[in-house]
Image 1 (cartoon, helix red, strand yellow):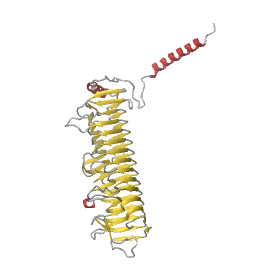
Image 2 (cartoon, rainbow, N blue to C red; image 1 turned 90 degrees about the horizontal axis):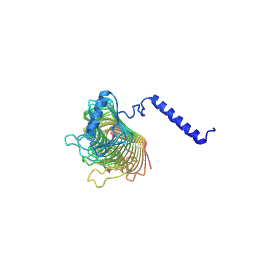
Image 3 (tube, rainbow, N blue to C red; image 1 turned 135 degrees about the vertical axis):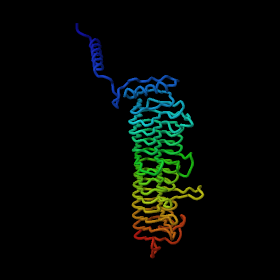
Image 4 (cartoon, one colour; image 1 turned 60 degrees about the vertical axis):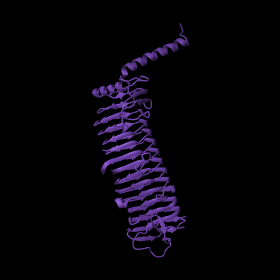
Length: 452
């Protein structure tokens, strides 16, 4: 009998199925992309239930057996969960949601090394945390080698992620609609915060703080940060894309930061801070700030488009000193006319022991570069900058108690109120020093500037 086309096709499919069964039987447990065994002890969501007890039981059992907790796609409704050393809490990327139903922090751990929290959506559901324990949805304390990756945190009535005395990485996370800060670090012991998307925070985007001034070394790089408000009030402690306080040797680089109430990057008493190659736009106050009791700041190769001041290196009266401001592009600044005193409109403002070199400044309604404030000026070198279309090109403190300033080889064009002038409390006075044949005094040297 000659076989028909239908019988040949049926036989081929049957053989393929049999072969697949043999391969599956011999292949062993299926692994996911991270190398974890798939499907082991997976918890299926129960619609409308409280899954806290089931989840915590699975976390405890997995820790005792030395295996990860693998969560399937779906929504699990849960209260507080506690992680143990070595816990790996892994979801299906973008498909596994832990919805907060109230209590203290959603996920906590203390003195737990080698934690992994990955591929989860943590939904705070805009529920208040317990009044005595309302720090964050994720709260880790004294944890080393932490990895939080590909986690979405949203609708948190506190911080999104809070790390105290922790080391490790927070990367590739999406954090939005949080009441305080998206990521808060206190007294880090070796932390990297990278490639996160942060938006709509009521106080700060990323906070790197220390209890006392000291070395920190946190790396903050390649994050996207937008729409940061200042609901907590104050004069700059809130409303910042990246806020570094008392933390030394922090590097903030390659971030895209927009629409912040105060600063894109604000370093307060943060010695040896490096603010490098960031892109900042639509900033309410000073875009890039080094202030108060710091020693050492490098602010280089950044782009600022739209702020009240582009860069400020200030508070010599509180010990703020020693900086390099180089290679930045700053444009489209504005004055805050609604403010009674602090209107600004400056491209770059510096005070002590600072080199300002190779910057391009355009459209500054007060001045391109401001040097000193009253007697708070010492050892400032301003050279090889291009300043265009400003009210005044460069303003220099006229206080006779101020220190030395050298202004040389700058190009200043379109400065309506003069190229280089003395000033008192921000107000220009006297002749244009760029065109004077006599030097203004022993402490100020002006030479070889090109004015048009």
